Amino acid sequence: MRHSRLRLPLCLLFTSLSVGAFAANEFTRDSGAPVGDNQNSQTAGADGPVLLQDAHLIEKLQRFDRERIPERVVHARGTGAYGTFEPTADITDLTRAEVFKSGTSTPVFVRFSTVMGYRGSPEQARDPRGFAVKFYTTQGNWDMVGINVPVFFIRDAIKFPDFVHANKPSAVTGVQDPNLAFDFFAHSPEATNMLTHMYSLEGMPDSYRHMNGSAVHAFKFVNAQGEVHYVKFAWKTQQGLHSLEPGQVSESIGKDPNMMTNDLYGAINKGDFPKWDLYVQVLKPSELGQFAFNALDDTKVWTGVAERKVGTMTLNKVPDNYFESTEESAFAPSRLVPGIEASEDRMLQGRLFAYADTQMYRLGANYQQIPVNQPRNKVSNNSQDGAMNSSGRKGEVNYEPSGIAEIPQDPQYKYASTPVSGVTQQLAIKKQANFLQAGEYYRALSSKEKGLLIEALSGDLNHVTNESNKYAMLSYFYKADPDYGTRLAKATHADIKRVDTAAKALAN
Image (cartoon, rainbow, N blue to C red):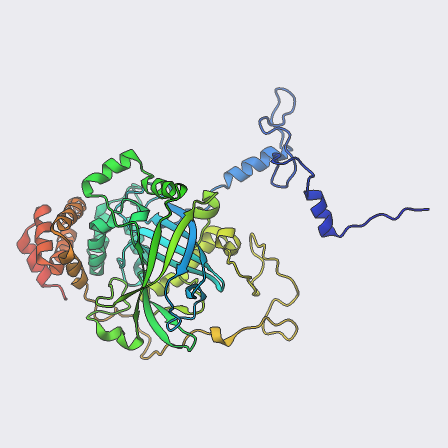
């Protein structure tokens, strides 16, 4: 009599083999096969050459050769942390976004960074600080990709590659050069406001915990009735604002070039969890024209518009793996959820494409399947294949529409309608007011803060050897505020009469 053999389903067979088959923490190859010797290569005899058949050696070297992924062009130097966001106000009148629903708690991952420095550069750079937040909402991921100040250098994304090239290290020497940076800024007067912020104390926080954040651009809130409001988001630290003065920067780098990361992780590990409150400014579409500048110009703040607190974020966990969290995390302002949409801000419109595209370049088409980027809700679409795909998509129907296996869609999640008019064009925006808010910001500073701004900014302007660029920059600051420009001219040994003449030739 023959004994029947027990036949396990393939999935159960794999499960039975994987549990208890090998000792815990046994050293293995990527395939799971155990490694007998991780110290000595296989050779042909005692003194012979190493054998190509040593699969463990070959795999180990191959993997080592490929450990690095492309460095971010900007924001390469980064630090990440996990936490939660909890709403504190009912804003269902403004948005249907579930992240703001009362009683919810949304997991977040935050990546702080500097912009122009390479991956291992000192954190105490005169540079914007990236402040990117990934909300793992029940309706998909929402990425709020911002910086530590509420404005930016340029207002049109077509200038972004040039802005970065001018501020990154020289293509010849590999060293950053103020001559190149200010050559660009001398021909980009809209940067005057941002430069004033960056050379003030606000531009040099002493810790990621001690700085505010901003999404910079205007976005849209859409409520359940389809009503649209324009909004700006701002994070305000509960730890207070603290900065490094110009004379403290070099000393700080010498003591600890990783100061901001060590401070953040040290606080979290001690249980001193940093918190930020989220505020929004809100405008009706009909109110966008009330300013002396274009309300969708990202070089401007919305003056005189009340802020409303809508939630609090707490960071409470240091990632277990730097590469798999901070390096592989991928942010894009196009990652929005129902109830939050993009505005017509020209700089934002370019970022909607560029950020997601650069993440595909860095990490591959399936970068959103990496755990740190993976949404908490199920993904269901017809995207398929590509490197590193592990979506588990099943079935023959990989198209739409279909009468066989249709994926349902809800019309309530259609984009809000936006009225447009006119003809296609390629012109700068009207109502630029390039110098207005730089002057307002300067006049709001204390006497000490003004002095530190002059010290920091003149320090870099004194390195500018191109005289026409130097006087162009001084005329911008003079146009913003005569006292501001006069003090900078004195600190840079410039002819104030020449500065005044150049400033008078500028449009407001």
